[in-house]
Image (cartoon, rainbow, N blue to C red):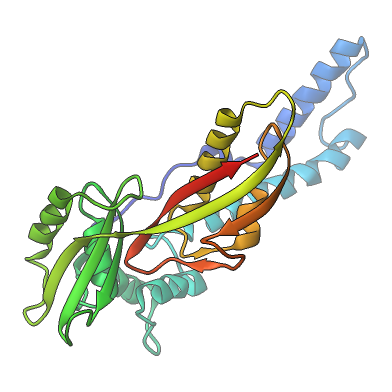
Length: 271
């Protein structure tokens, strides 16, 4: 494996002397602004004895911060942090395996593992196609060897026929021989919201309705569970004083969006 150089982060590598000098410079500048004489700041002076240990602590904390930052990346992680990467890849450390050997196995897995045709693999492969925003794969939808993948566009709306056909073509090479694969546009799950609003005297109904629509649509995007009480909090936009007679798909319960569908809002407002 080619060696990957660690990034240079000079801000995180200040020595205690550098930090102390900056502190001393600030103290001198502050004294000048006030018209005072700057305190003696050489080694052995009271200011030095008080402030230099703080500079040392800051320097050490910067080193720890740099170390923690680098542990987030597989090429530089070690020990328990490397084991955490292994959990992510589903590849545990072998007994007695050293960091470098384990790191190499993880990097090889990340570079070469294409998956074995599980549901999650088809979802990942579909999401990697340009233009696809979301993908949900359902196994055995039609028979024991079927895989149906329902996709949305980047706006979270059901994909066009053209996009579905493009994904189908790109996934054919990855499709396992026995799998009957279909790429389909996600279905629409209509969310009917009805509410009666009490508006402020100067409020414009059309503006209020648009604000509520925007808020609910943002809430619905990609959400599998729609909570009745949470939708209710979204009615309080500028101009709304109170609301009543609120129903969600004709009732007052939560809704579950089917796995193969995306929510579509139908808002009915009365005053």
